Image 1: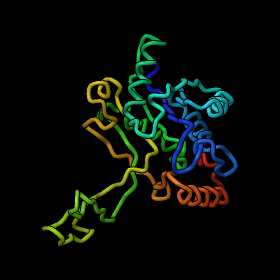
Image 2: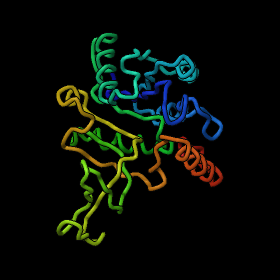
Image 3: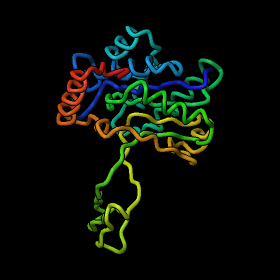
Image 4: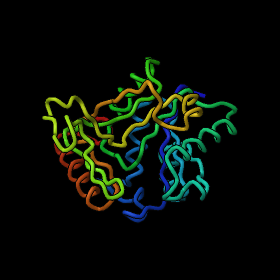
Amino acid sequence: MGDCICLIPARGGSKGIPAKNLHTLASSPLVSWAIRQGLAADIGPVIVVTDSPEIAQIAEGWGVTVYDEPAEIADDFVSMEAVMSWFVGQCRERAGSVPDWLMVLQPTSPLRLSSHIREAWVVAKTAAFDSVFSAVRSAHCAWRLQGTILSAEWPQKERFKRMRRQEAGQQWTENGAIYTVKTERFLVTESRFCPPMYVYEMPLWTSYEIDGPEELAIVELIMRARMQLGSDGVKT
């Protein structure tokens, strides 16, 4: 198979927004943005994995291959890695081989552009890293509840004595837009994060992932504002 396949996992169900991947965003179904961005990047075949006939119809309308997702991996509780593993198995079964690289483009992160996909792929092709994932620069402290203990996930001199942001060094937050991994390493680790890793930094305005109505409204505003400035939401 080719060097890289762009995999778009797009199941039909969703708890936060019913049929989220079919929801209209800036006049197009959400899933279509990922498809168009993947096609415009032109780094390899774009394949949609879905359990939804409606999503399959949209994908086929763009001329991309659709893999019918079985019910057991189209559940809320199934990990991305489980979907990736199933897909790699399908590649081997259908084509007798697997791609060198697998790039996952989640439909719920539609603010990425084809140029971002190509830039991440340029890094991957250097073979200096086994996985490349997208993120945005972060300067905020995250808090985690571990049982009944509240702990800060931020570099600290000692407990509850915060470092200044300038002292803390670089920190990123994933934006869910691009995950690229060497297939052979993924099969060994069963993880999309395989050291050595590279953080592909994207602009802050790409930070939103659509989980519920609030994020959908914010992303709609960002996308339409950028379109007013000349962006088409795919290449610019």
